[in-house]
Length: 477
Image 1: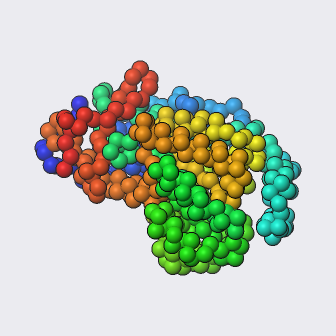
Image 2: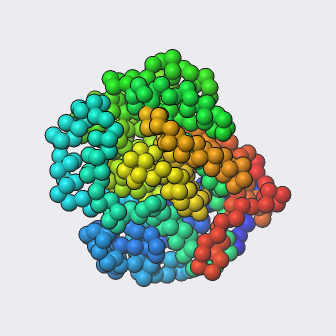
Image 3: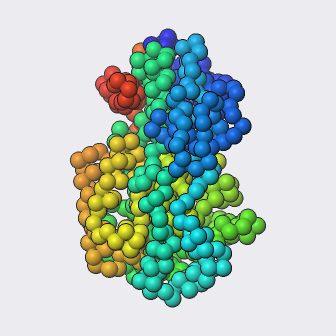
């Protein structure tokens, strides 16, 4: 084990985090572990060619040394594990972990989708404009037919992986395993992902898109409350179906959350940057007017590299694996992450509309499968259930089953059911926490540290195992 430091003193790496490389910093930020445990290096002679490769079971995109890359994820891919070298007891990664993780989270990889000519035609600007102009007048049956055409071939998309992609989590665990295996360190302490040792986190959100959805909101709040669940309602501030202010006040009075949903939900927020900047300024004004902290774009359209124009605290517009969204891609992670100053809370499960009307599935089987996968990574489980699409009794019955399942997870599986704003605050607090060595113990310091827990990562064969520290042994300030 590393040499203990005197009680109350930070490790050298903690006091001077600037000595960490970007690759080491992204590792420390993910785990919130002392910097000295980011005991790995990056090869200096990376290829100038970027492409797809793997790192064990993780998919990756970027520059890599000594490994063949491919232009699409469907090709046979080289495994960067074969390129890992060791120097003075430290593994040397053949790629920049920070660059590759950013490429995944912010969707900077070259996304090749399976849709061919049909997809290109249906995403053409004139057709998209016509669809969003006519959308309020189209019955759900017509919209469902058009969207099934648009999304045809989604099953053949090689990457991100369906139904949940864990590439970022797998990459972090693989790196941690290399450090443990190479350094001789028996266990690595870190700040557990969720407050009070919760095993995972789940949030429910409702995007209100029209008058029929607004009419159901009060009943939907009653339903959520009957299972002890509070949700976030996202409201469209302009034009189609603007949510009445008295309904917004009612959301808050009953303990629900209110966020902004696009500007007018016409599908063109991110069409071009000058127009986007104008609309972003309008969205910011509504954020201030409504006192909201969160945002979700219409139809999950997004351009994460433009997010610096926004003033909200967190965004919820990026799917984990966007196979059934108009804009393909995905962030390949089941954990929140920062895009500049904004915290991204990714959508990690299939939307209710896609489940009912694209997949034709009226059960919670797919949701349960996604939940189980995300829980295996102690991740963030997020849902969109639209009031507009829960008007149908059959759909509302399925949603009720989901609420009962979430209640069971909270009561029996230690899952944290939270509002998005609570997750935003926790993740920001955790990002400012540090672990301080006190003799043979670790203590957490930082905002809301009383709710934080020390955890340890160890190896069980080739598998990384997380264990919460015994609170009777570890101490916190």
